[in-house]
Amino acid sequence: MFGPCMLHFDTEEETYGKFFSHVSDRFGQKTRLTIGSDEEKSMTNALKAKFPHANFLLCTKHIHDNIRQHLQENGAGVQARKRILRVIFGKNDGIIFSADDTEFDYRCQNLEPYLEQLPIFKSYWQRFVLCKIKTCCSPITRRSNQCAMDK
Image (tube, rainbow, N blue to C red; front, side):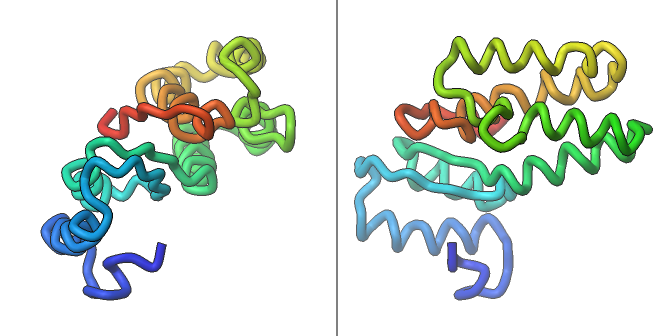
């Protein structure tokens, strides 16, 4: 997104709101848009306010980086971090590449041993990541999306 940062030089919710008001006026709030973001809070709030009917996609690179950082800050070793990230983001067989809900749930089972070994990550995964990946990142999302971006 070339977006409001480049046009307005800040990341304030009010600035995003003004920018997205202009975009909304152009497209209309009822238009069913698909919007991708890195989940930056002020942008997310402005998007939800101006495009309440939009589909939201999240940047998997940012989620990957956030998970890696969380694991590192909470004492997960290098090998554990690599294995966990591979289970979630592995090319073609990662959780995010699940073709449907059944496959998604099945692939999430591969993460269970790591969740049990790392209770802090288990809490982070369940509270902040799982729903977002399922509703805003997976191929399932590309067909239908109602993302709870405010979790």
